[in-house]
Structure formats: structure tokens, C-alpha cells
Image (cartoon, rainbow, N blue to C red):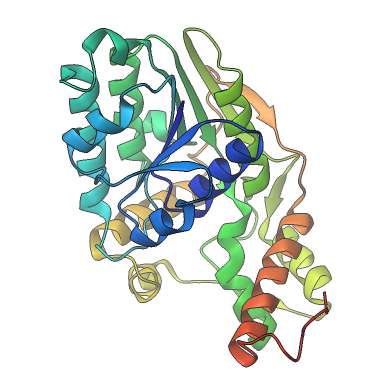
Length: 314
């Protein structure tokens, strides 16, 4: 039995989809009611608990051989950053204490795959929570695979929307700096592979794309995908907090993301020499093309919710 938690974000959903597609027994734990409804009746065991409570983890982990840990997405109904801390504490409480549904010896035998991020070992910005979780899990379980991921290419989606409609791609990145990036589908494939064929003991992996990209590279890829001239705009750091809060982050989460981007721009989010590097295959242009397809689908759905006009069109 595989437990995917939190399964509410796009990565958790994609991991669940792949595991189910391969005929695996999968259980999901998430506070996202829409996600729970999505999986009911589709061969997935849906846990009705809340991952902010240790009792929910205790019940969800019963009978599980492999746990895929994915922190919940930062954009949700609850304002979030506090929820992430509660999530970590609840998981560790369940693993350390056991309970009527989870024996302490079984808890240590569960194979865990943790999705983390570059910079977690330095506890920089929002990756601080991941660094703490890495340390906690390393002390409490026998088989732990940590996958630190580079910046997700799909995080450029909001900039692509602006580029399409206003010919300007705004970014928190600066010129003359290159950034390690990876496509979401490569990350999902690695997570699933690590879950299906887990490594024994402790393993630290670092996932990035085939190459690093500068702001000029990002703009060039955006131009090719959108087939129009666009210009880059490095957003002033003094405006970052407000921009992030306008995008849906609460202030505390925005502060941590601001700090993380600032460290990236200073070149402080670098590869950890202790980690085993893994290179994804997808190039930035491939990922941005998928972003553009999703943008187009959403626009068509808004214009034609019944899909009558665009039926049969790619």
C-alpha cells in the first residue's frame, strides 16, 4: 500500500495518477475536499482525515509500506504556512509515538520518499520547513529517500500569462544569473520511480533539468512558444511581498518565498555536494509549451464552458 500525502496539489495528484495507472494500491491523505472527491470511485482509498492532526496520520499510515511525503501547496483556502508547520509536527508525532492503528515498530519500517527542495540543507526561505522535516525523518525512520528538486519550470506560468497578453514577462529573477530548473513531469516520474523501487537506508538525491537557464533563456523560450516578441521585466524586490500576496500567499508565506528568491538571485541556492545529482530530460521550451496548452484550455473553457465551439480541436 502506498500513501500519498498531501495529495491535494498538482504533484501529489500526478503521482497518485501514475501509481493507480500501474495497478498499485494507493491511499491518499489530504485536507482538500475536492481532491478527495476526485479520487472516490477511481480505485483509490480516500482517507477522510486532516494531515494537520497526528491521529489522521496514525490511521492513514496503518498497513502502508511506502509513504510519499509532499508538503501541501502554498495556495489554498487556509492561508497555509501555519498549516505546513502543523503538517510536519503531526506526521512526526504519528511516526514517533505509534498508536492503536500504527505500531511503533511498523512506523520505523515504512519506506519514506520525501519531496524536498534545493537549499533545504541551508534552511533558506520557505525551504527551512523542508530542512527541518529532512532532519526529523532522518532520525526517525530506517529507509528514507530525499529528493531535492530545483525550481519548477511550471512556476513561470503566471509570467507566461502576462507575456501572452501584454508582451512582457515579469520575473523575480535577475539578469546575468543562471538558475537550476526542472519540469514537473520529470519530478513526478522520479518520485514514482523512487516509491516503486525504494532504496535501502538513507539516500539524498538532487533533481535538476538538462541545463541551467538565465532570464534571457526564459524569455527566448517564451517567445518561441507564444510566437511573439516579448520583453523581460525583473520585478523590484521592494514590490515582491505585495505581488506575492496579490497572487494568494499570506504575508508569512510571502516573506519566506521572498527570502528564497533573494537567495537564488545571490547564487546561494546551489547543488549540495553530498547529494547524488539526477538530470531530468525536459527542456524549458517543452515545459512552457505545456504551460501554454493549459492556458489555452482555460481560456477556451471560460469562453465556451459547454465545449461546443471548440469540440474536436487540439
